[in-house]
Amino acid sequence: MANIFTIKNTYSFNTLDASILDSRYESVEVVSTTTYEEAIKYRDIQTVHNDMKSKVTNLPESVRDCSFVLFKTLTGERVLLANEWLDINSVVLKNLMSYNIRVDNAGVDDMNILRNRLLELGYTNFEITVA
Image 1 (cartoon, helix red, strand yellow):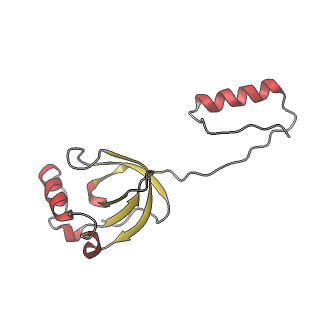
Image 2: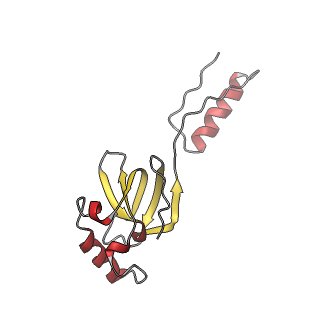
């Protein structure tokens, strides 16, 4: 399978079997893509692949045929996974950025509406200043 991840981008996704791997990875950054030879230095990928094959029928016969990606979690932990072990349909690009929004001729009521709407949308780490 071709690599679908871009280095330095941040993604969230599910794995194909939660009994073997964590079921979901949230906001993990792609550190690198790697070969089988490098991947075996990070974890016992042969055992993981064999375990996954017992649960997921369409995996490559050999772990050497997998495409490997090294991720960094929000806690700084590095996790190596094969693309083939992931639910590709669940992959979401999650690059986070900061935005500045300027609203001219707005009153206090308008700012309260904006603040409440941001909170309703799930944003909690924001700042509204008056210029």
